[in-house]
Length: 92
Image 1 (cartoon, one colour):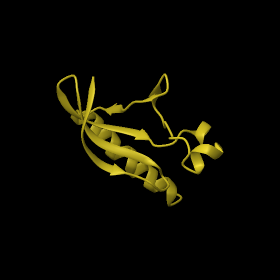
Image 2: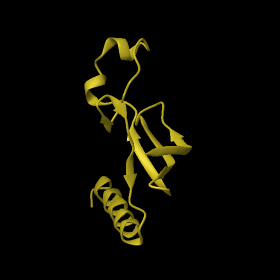
Image 3: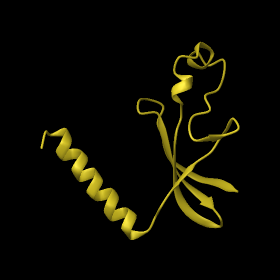
Image 4: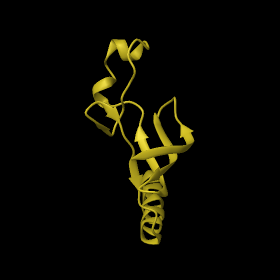
């Protein structure tokens, strides 16, 4: 079972994602999710607030969280990936 401990970012704009500290398997982790799924972008009832967006990931229509790894290897790879992304955006 996952318990949301603290929402760090609840993006209401683009990009519409959320980042939270969650408790998963009795351990604190970082979780991330999209607040709206591609299939929901063109849904008139969801766009005008009549229906709630489920987002992604989800399981059987229930919003879920993607648990981010928190080991040092992931941190290093993520940092390197962000650096490379920045280089590509600058045309390098």
